Structure formats: structure tokens, C-alpha cells
Image (tube, rainbow, N blue to C red; front, top):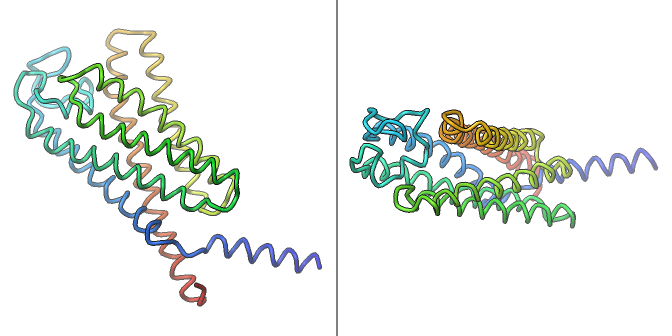
Length: 256
């Protein structure tokens, strides 16, 4: 009886792991991978068209990764007072699309967790927090810092806590309910650590002040977002491959 029960439990666990993914799950994950790659292409391209200048030297040529923040690519006018229309026309669509994709992606993750009551609600909270952070990304993009610096900075500092919250929720959910492979939880945890390091850096920079503070707020934020997008792209691609294999496995076994 004990062996039969153990075998039945193993079979149920295997079936749960190989549940046929929905179109929304599979292609929502793949779309997020494409958007992350597109974000890098558009962002790096926009840097080459940045007219120049930074907070310390208005006449400095081109884009300086150390002293020009990523969101400065969305300014209406560069620090050297030249029109920034080309740069922002390339950068803003990429950042808006990234925000929309993050909204979809976290609801895709939520769609895997509907059975266990506690996990279901924690997953839903994570999805809502992720959606809010995605919306704030969009607001960051469409609110140039040189037009309304106060509102722009509020969006930036509001987006981080919501993203931090959603990463905590989904890291716990994936660890507890082993429906998805372990790499999902590891990559979510890596993204969470990325935000923790940024938060610590901002606090330390605020205490120290001076050039170090500005360096962390410019280069630090840029690196944190780049790391986040890279990790999310890797997660999305690996999860898409996993879901594709799951679909083929169920097709070969005749399961519906």
C-alpha cells in the first residue's frame, strides 16, 4: 500500500509538472524575451544619437555612461541644450514596450498558480505589484526629466519598491510550489538581489554624497536595469524552451 501511494503521488507530481501550457503562457513568455532583446537594441542605439552633455559638463560630447542616467535618454533637450528628438524617439518606445511586457509577464507567471489557496493569493499579489511597476516604467518614459523632474523622479523611486515586492512574492511562490523548474526561482532571486544591491548603494551614496552619490544614481540605476532585463530575458527564454518541451512531451504521451 505504501509503495502504491508513493507511486500515485509521484505520478500526480509528474503530471502537474507536465501540464500542457496555454497559448497565453507559452507565447507571453516568448514575447517578453523578444521585448527584452528589443529594449537593449533600442537603448544602445539611442545612446549613439545622444547630443551630449551631463550634469557636471554641459559641453561633454556624446553619452557618458558614468554621468548620464538611462532615463536622460528620454529628455526633450540634452544637457548641451540641443534637441534630443532622435534619441528619445528611439529610447521611449523601447522603455514603454518593456513596461507593457513586464505587466503581461507577471500575469503569465501568476497563471501557473491557481490550485493552492495560499500560493494563489501570494501569486496574484505578485502579479498586481508587477503590473503596477510596469505601469510606472511607462510613466517614467513619457515624463521627461527636463519637463517635470519631480514627477519623473517619483515614478522612478516608486517603481523599485513595487518590483521588489513582486520579486519577493514570486520567488517564494516558485520555491514553495515546484510547478516550474528551479532555474525560475534562482533567476527571480538573482533579480531580487540586484534590486537589494541597488537599494543599499543608493542609501550609501546618499550618506556619502558628492560625486559618489551621483555615480550610483546614474551608473548604478543603469546597470541595475540592464542586469534586470538580461536576467528576465534569460528566464523567459529558458522557460519558453521548457514549456515547448512540455507541450511535445504531452503530445507524445497522448495526454490532453
